[in-house]
Length: 204
Ligand SMILES: [Zn+2]
Image 1 (spheres, protein in one colour):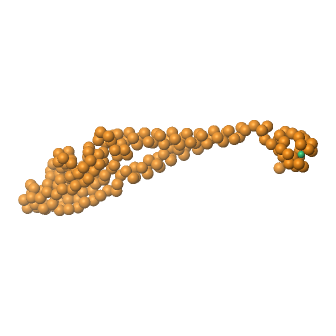
Image 2 (cartoon, protein in one colour; image 1 turned 90 degrees about the horizontal axis):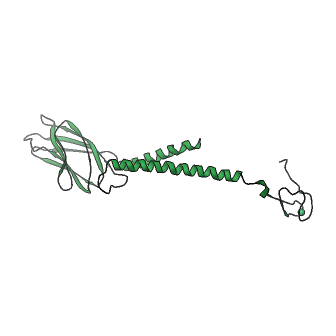
Image 3 (spheres, protein in one colour; image 1 turned 90 degrees about the vertical axis):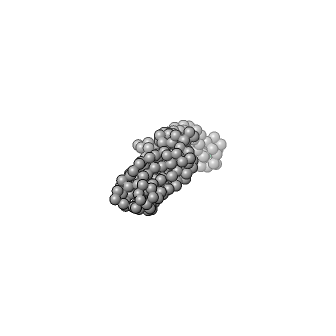
């Protein structure tokens, strides 16, 4: 019966961990003028995952060119000409500045209103290789298993200790003489010191 508490506790711990790993969603709103380009820069650690959505309005097409570059300027995601909106998702392979580029240079007359909603999720343990993604989940599952095993071990340890106390032999117990106070074994009929009859209050 008591074992049922262990997985529940583990799940609560995991929920708490996840809550600290995932930051609250951020929202950035800005206008990109005609023939302009807007850069939204994010300083990330290796393994950080960024995901969210973009909404575009303005001009006749409600569109903008959207891409993501890594710290050395290489394009890691190219969403092309986004109309009205798009979702995005990428994981930083190295530490540094990642840039979400909103390119309106194709538009000669129109400004575009952009709204970006995004989340940054840090890995449980930063990946050594920078692979991120699935290794984060592997570590989380491993942590969950360790927590369940640890809680179960503590619970069974408690039960074992309780059992040890209840099986302590009665013969090792001691009784004190009501007349002289000498210590006698629990089964003694007469005091080994003064010879008085050992009084017991067994009725209580
Ligand atoms: Zn005695």
